[in-house]
Length: 519
Image (cartoon, rainbow, N blue to C red; front, side, top):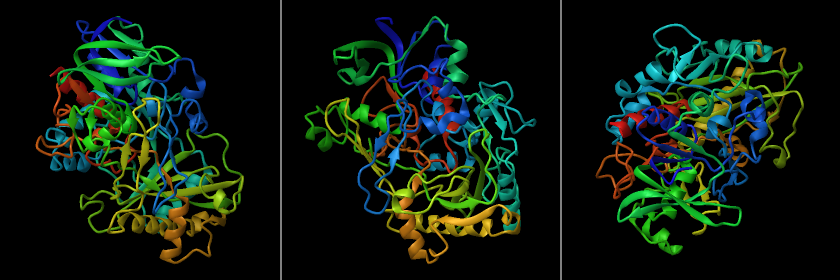
């Protein structure tokens, strides 16, 4: 560890690892990448993709309990990774190109310069090394993407049933976002199923780079300022809570994720003024948008007992995606799907068993989620102690129009229609939950509210937007308004959560941010 760096990046996750790798390509600058968790190097429980479910609620998980929900499942918890690579070292590595419509929608919401024409080429030119040929894919980039092999017979039948229901088999990542169709996923993993996380893809190849110091197991407590300029960070030096500081000559870049980034900003005096004063924190910038605008992909679940033994060897157990437009025009009228389902080849009774629903060792499920959910939640401090977990309140299904629940109910109905097709006759046994007696929209909605999960995609809590938008704490250059030398680069900057699994988008945000910073 040096006494001073040009750039300090707080959080070595899906975006932060990318920024550290790209900035340190210039040998004339020094970069410190700080991660609260441990390294992933030589840790098979992290690197082996098929082991990912065991990481939930483990020592590699911040494991945030959510606040009691007025219309949703209060037993929910948000898994956020505490390890080099962040959630890309923790997730199922479902890999989607960012929808062009989402990027252009960001521009309409004030994020000038993030249009599809500007941003999407970075996937092909730098980010991706795809096993598919063709101009729609990058070849030779950092992150290896491959197509899931169709070796699960129940999954093969699910796709055939989708065809029979009118949802054609349509490959993903082929230049247009699929809004009506289904297929096997692409995943960011090697052929021997080692995850291609941001850490594996961007950091492992440069671990010996002399101007890049990767500092793990360091918990940052606040950002330091001289006047309104960020000049470094304070961090916990030892197990007894002694503190130390580290200086940054050029910029501090916060990449701690959609929950920890707003927390760190608030602890540093940037956030809703009244909220900060509750805990005796001096207000540097009154930024009401910090910790607001929390978005997610809430996920209903429906499951069937299988008539045949389910596979015991899968790439990552969630290997098929199904998309549909419920409303004319799709999500937000953008032509995007309102509804996405993942097919899971394992028992998934995480939130149903406690409600008394039956379970089975041989079972499969479909999980309808809302791609552009309308409900908005918050992240708020629990205290002024950096060691305390923040209050995470997603406020699931609280949108006034009832759109989110309407899409979830439609998803349960569509899932039933798919599994009722002839292709599933030899595979689908009894419906475990919600059960065939749950038929009315009201009963389905009651079931969803009590048992829904999340796809673990919090975003939007430090969103970028127009310079004069008081609820957007960042400008389109990802600079924190009201101060100098401070940016945020992670899922929290999204004005709107993408309509697909967002992990590749988070890496793409890191690629785009590195250009903005160097520019």
